Length: 366
Image 1 (cartoon, rainbow, N blue to C red):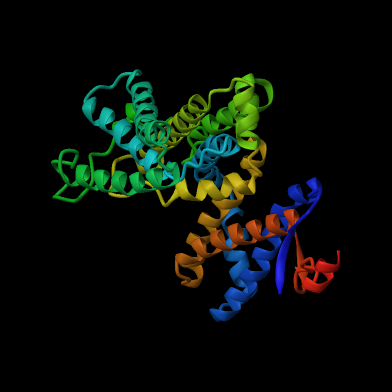
Image 2: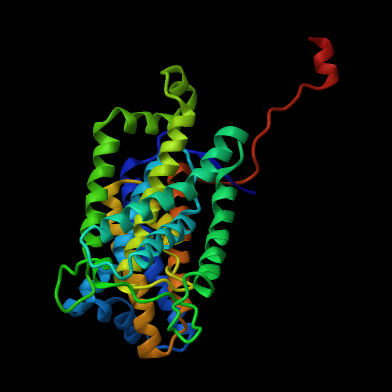
């Protein structure tokens, strides 16, 4: 019989090393995967991990992919520390892109400086409103935010498809399901000429700073951590749980909505039936890989962004299926969770000991 026994004092050092261990095991498993696919391991690793960042343009693309992951993962980390499990950041990202893109299309013929700030504001509000639905359901009806936020993601995707097939479709686009290309005034400034790296990367770093200050230097951050680790102690200290739930979900919605706007006004440049390859879901892995810490999220976001670039590179160079990206991300999360289990629990072999009951005769004699 195999059972798990809680450790008296889990190692803090191993908690920090666990992401590296999970990454190494994922790489070793990747070697086995490439061998089973009949692909030379050396060529596959070069195409997946080296070639995408072997040039300045490749490094800039790493920043483009990492920016939305970092923005969302920082906000998710804050919520997860407060024991608020938002799984619907993908839907909040989509709503942010829809609202920001709609503002850009409304001011399509206006070449003014205020268009882009209005788009950002609309993206933030759109993400917050979408996140407010599971917050309301959790605080008023005690509905599980995991289920409600996740289901709203699919509604957001269908809403985007409806809009680009209907009201927001390009009238000169030959009936293709896409909006007009955004005007120059409605696109994010490029910070590195000759690349697609835009100002959204700086915004992501700014959110990292906000997240770090919030968690380590404010009473609100302390209340969020106490609510996650000891809810009863938080209530005794006077921290209102419903307010923390609202803040966690709305803050995540704002960051996810801004990330969606950055995609629409950045590398995509218009509204399409799909504006995200799953950043909202991948950001969950980034948050845990970064140990729910804003600084750790930066490095985890770069690793996951490399998996996106590597998957595209391997698809082009070696004709590998694009699903390899998802396989690597899934293996990384699986091994990370497995490492966390072994850090907090000890594997015990053998039958569990149970106390013997005294026999009836012995009990009677007593």
